[in-house]
Figure: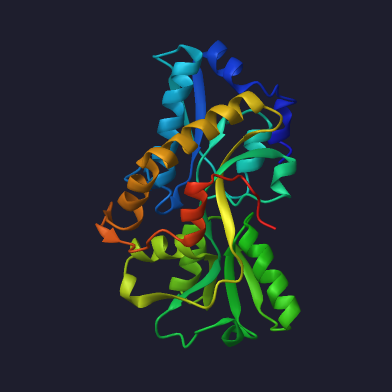
Amino acid sequence: MLALGLVGPVGAQTLKKVADANKITVAYREASVPFSYLIGSSKAVGFSVELTEAIVEDVRKATKKPNLEVGYMAVTSQNRIPLMANGTIDLECGSTTNNSTRAKDVTFSTNIFYTGTRLLTKTDSGIKNYADLANKVVASTTGTTNAQVIRKYNADKKLDMQLVLGKDHDDSLLLVETDRAKAFAMDDILLFGLRANSKNPAALEVVGESLQVEPYACFLRKDDPEFKTLVDGTINRMMKSGEFAKLYDKWFTQPIPPKGMNLGLPMSEELKSNLKAPSDQPAM
């Protein structure tokens, strides 16, 4: 964190920064299936990646830079907010929960998805809900709202879970696969995606009720209404035109790379409502 802070204060006017440098730097996630994830060693794909590409096209038009260079940077749950705050990245569309705490440091776009914390466990684990995890080891990922949610739930219910944190979602999944944790608490959609692309999907299942409903959104630097207007404009236009729904179907209800797995997740009622009346309302 201290190293990240060495860059110093950054002006909020993203479009001017991008135009002057003839470059925009966008973030991607390495294991947030189906939003943003790697296939092969360096190619990021996913629902959020395609949203990013649409926004970048509108940035090219707004800055009159048809040959605008695009830099790509992998981020984690832990460093994504600091990297935006210090000016290293200009846009993040991944799997980031829009909440009031984070809104103190960054600005969120129109919401693009709604999810909640559930559990990924082995099918033969005997775990069906949170009560089954009393006195057991539970994994989550560093820097996520889910780690906070499961920690609070554990304290409120006095379950005496032992929480261990992976550095990223793949690391947390590995804790379950290698029996170092009984379950992995994370956004349900990410759990379905991780399961679909795991070595043995049939050996894993998503269980438990959703502990909360939270929105995902893209985020940008604070106090930059010009860039927020552009980002929201792209997303809202896609929602109105039907492009967003088609993109959703591509990544959530059809086979996706690299294994051709189908997550089979129809659009939620919350997201359908957001398409009709786009909102950037944060999680409570």
